Image (tube, rainbow, N blue to C red):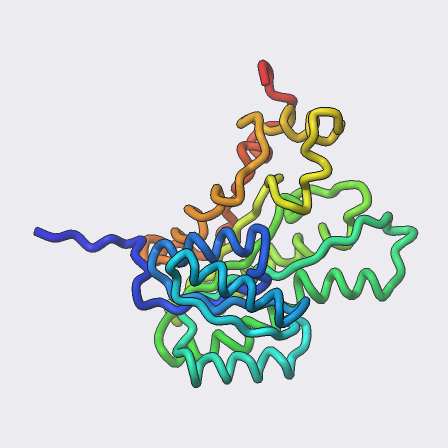
Length: 264
């Protein structure tokens, strides 16, 4: 007797925003490994999108790229229309695009605040609103919103980011509430602290933040980008068909403890 693998994504089309680098690229690679076809979004430059697509294809994945600004409603709607027309129906949407500005709330200009909130929160509403009606018509789909430890914690100098990611947690739950009746599962992933190019200056033996993260994390280390792949594949697959409105924190145990772990 054969058994169906509930984590198999063969034949599924996944749109991952902000997937030209970092954690977005890691999660897209995980979806590709599980069999999904990839739609790669980025906005910094066409060259960067093309380079990312080349990387995915060199790994053996079926991938194509679309450059559009996730905060621009017209660009998003035009891109989704083109994707659905030329590439096929979007089965999996990963709302990953985001930015952070490390400025105290007192010193943060309004335009910077609005940019952080627009990119991390409002964009999820814009992109999902363009994608989900088609999922409703087809009778199902998966939406994965990339939240953060800052969906639960405040932290000095990242107030705008924390406000946006806290809002994203509640938007995820509201989306799940409204769309579960259409067989659409909406969940979130909350990454902890990961070893990426962006955090490389902090991950040296002499940097106090490196010691802080390792001592604060029960696992005693920074996360590797590949550590996010299992959660992404789970939430994108049939294995999570009765999971809705949840945030899975991939953080090495930070949220599990109030104190500094011993013997780390």
